[in-house]
Length: 376
Ligand code: PMT
Image (tube, rainbow, N blue to C red):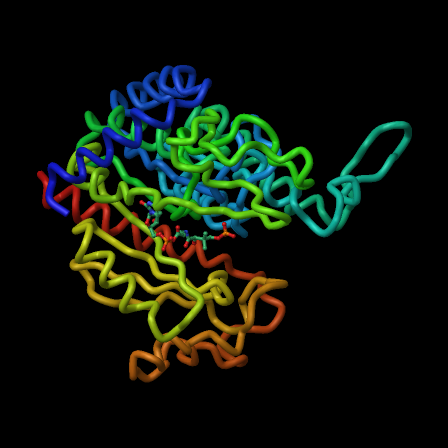
């Protein structure tokens, strides 16, 4: 697609899919936050996190969603803060948040971490140390005002927020970074093909077969019942990565993610994305091993795997450890980093688990330093 076609797609999307109600508030908050940190010469990263929904009705009862809990984004935000970044955390409402993530969305209730003592609530002894550590980091971050939390629910809200915040970040020049970890919908129901009211499941109450406004000449609603079936005919969401790279934030470092389930295509797809959008870094990850391994694909450093040593891996209910290293093998490479340094005698058993984001963020911060130096 040439530049004018991409611009036309952008204009069409944002003209036909109205902005979220809280966009103005978000812009005001972001402008103040970015201005303050720019003045202090700090790097600012926009971390996107969680899944976007695709509503099927204007007064939304039903929507399409995806699996993302926001672990990658919320965890990464903490490590960016530790590395001196100011963080704009654009996340799916009610997905994981930095710091509180340690005690939410858990198989255990947060109340299980507490007990009553002399009529007061206290933290159970075995959780004191860890909770104190998290609380101290949280309090420090609040005191320094380094985290701005913004939220979206739908794909359209996400794209409006991304575009407007990206434009506000332009004055930061190369000190801006975009870390796009949100799981973004590829298909959606455009506003002009969306019915107003709840789609009826029973034939007696289902709407007319005309368009969303009832006219026979319009395209039918994208989601509708036909007989007893629900038909959903989604349209592609334009990929705005190109716009981000070329137009919205041309000087910032852009890190996108590539999620796949098939190990044999992960690296190829990440490479394809890097070539197509010409940004700085694609981080490839597989659904079932994403907490233990990722692959960096960049022009600066080529292909580079990052893996958590075997006996330091976090637990994952959905993860499949035997799949770690398969994408390497699929690319015909020897899986050295999967075994290197991982023998049990080298890392004592019982050591605390390592979150892969604690390995990812320092690498990215180093790349960012190189890019800032190059720009200067
Ligand atoms: O939240 P967790 O459970 O921890 O999971 C983390 C994660 C697996 C969601 C995360 O690590 C991840 O891979 N996020 C990106 C998922 C994704 O949208 O992949 P994709 O291959 O569909 O898109 C690739 C890139 O294109 C993304 O960076 C996205 O920002 C961008 N995109 C996608 C769709 C779209 N319509 N426009 C886009 O610009």
